[in-house]
Amino acid sequence: MRGPNLPTISQFFGILIRMFFDDHPPPHFHAVYNEHKAVIDIQRLEVIEGRLPRRALSLVLDWAELH
Image 1 (cartoon, rainbow, N blue to C red):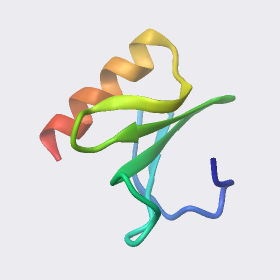
Image 2 (cartoon, rainbow, N blue to C red; image 1 turned 60 degrees about the vertical axis):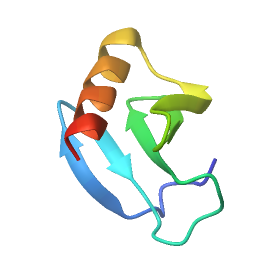
Image 3 (cartoon, one colour; image 1 turned 120 degrees about the vertical axis):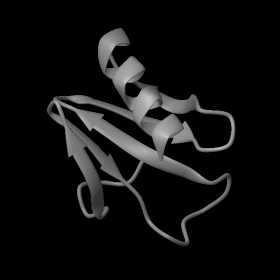
């Protein structure tokens, strides 16, 4: 998982959503909440690496559905 150099595209409730335009497949974004990090597959809306607390993950997935 890449470090803090990813561009932040959204921020809410202490959660950072980070993404590179032309990153490796599958299309995904990174979610960071405190010390927790997860990579979310955009097409399937599921965690493909890392983990987030249940409530943070729910907020991230809700955000992803809207965007």
